[in-house]
Each structure stands twice: as C-alpha cells, then as structure tokens.
Length: 89
Image 1 (spheres, rainbow, N blue to C red):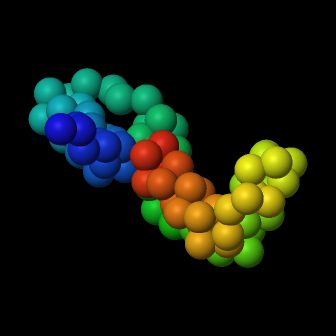
Image 2: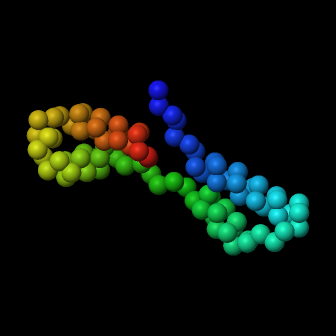
Image 3: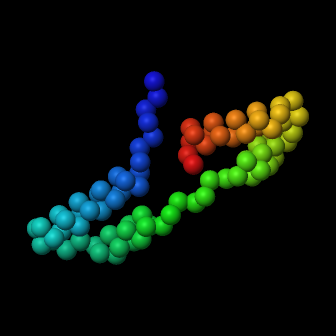
C-alpha cells in the first residue's frame, strides 16, 4: 500500500494562514515579505502537464530509441504517465 503524495500547496497555505493569524493574535511581528511571497507563490497556477507528444519525445530521447524501438507509442506513454503519477505532475 502506497502513501498518498501530500498536497504541499494546501499545507503551505495552511501554514501561512496560521503564521499570519499567530502574529496578529499575539501582536508578534511576522516577516511580512515571507508571508507575501508565499501567498504570491500559492496564487501562481501550476504549469500545464506535458502533452503526449512531449512525453513521447522525452521518453525516446532518454532511451535513445533502444527500448522505444521495441515498444509502441502506447507503451512509451504508459511509461511516462506512470513516472509522472509516481514522482510528480
């Protein structure tokens, strides 16, 4: 059984909110530039996922057609999508 990948953006947003609230509640100066930068980063949309063509090109470049010559495009895409699912979007 695999552990689900944490939602780091949601966790960061929660921490920024807590930090902001903590500073306000206890009248503690919080480094506002850090909070501001974190909020700006969280507001930035994530990059678009790669297209199938981009994935095929990357897989074939990595394998230098040694493996891809024996595999179809569907196999290459399955490999690339599996890697993305496992290690990030």
